[in-house]
Length: 386
Image 1: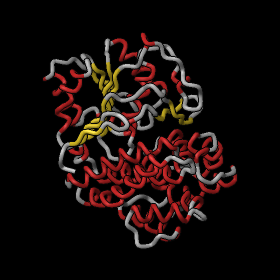
Image 2: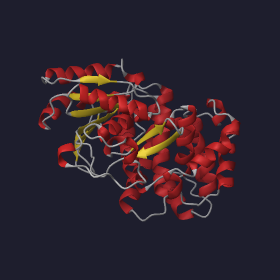
Image 3: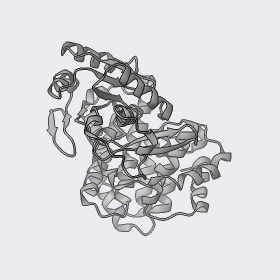
Image 4: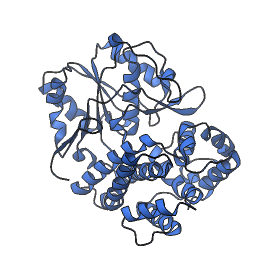
């Protein structure tokens, strides 16, 4: 975990401590001259932004910073980012930060060089035709948290400001030219964000593995992600300067992010709509909801539960034992026990459940659920998830 590695699957990935210093050379190699740096409001004054700008300056590159991205990116912010890209004559986007920065940067990239409406890129719709003269700009992703796993694909979650619902936008031909994974960038992450983002990666791996579709590539990545996350998340939480633990989480998060190309489940379907309405942290929301959905999904899935338990090196391989171990980990990293503790009110439950069933993640959940069942799950997560 302390040595640099380059991987070519599914996109070029540069992993290793200190590799942010390569960004200028990497941009030059891709013919980039004037990138737009996209991050979230909370990251605009952090050291990694200053360092990134310095490395670009040293390479003789122009750049500008767009930081008007919320914790749950909004369609109006994407429009503002597109205007910034065009007005500044930029030729690439560097998305740096957590999941919101990744999603915001990718969504801006989708719309930067064309006049296609953002929502025409919604995941459930036919992909728009992109002409060569309006091709997507180069995209470089640099995650600074170990959780979202959003660095290797074009998919991004954006809130529709009119409907107060989250939707996934993407295009199959938009791929990052480089995902740069530097675990040093996560060393300064506060304990709560280490826990919330790390739990997000855990949810990604579990939900992806449970999707019933046959995809052994994604399943293998999900199980390896579970192995890394279960080993290193508690260590990174307790020992924030442990670079090996930070590296293990960075790789585990990336693998989990690739694995959910297979799909997700009801944890995400409910969490997306909670986040759109209450602007909660996505990873934290996922973590709270996870045990509730596991109790709904796992009965009868003994073989998959066994394989996840083995990947996590658990002694107990039963459904009950697996859920207990997950809950113990959530306790260890101090995840709240209910959505009400983070400001979600009980009166939203029916509204959230109705929206959640429209989420693409609900359609890949391993067990079909009625509105009444999703309402019950939502109410339980709000009142007492574990």
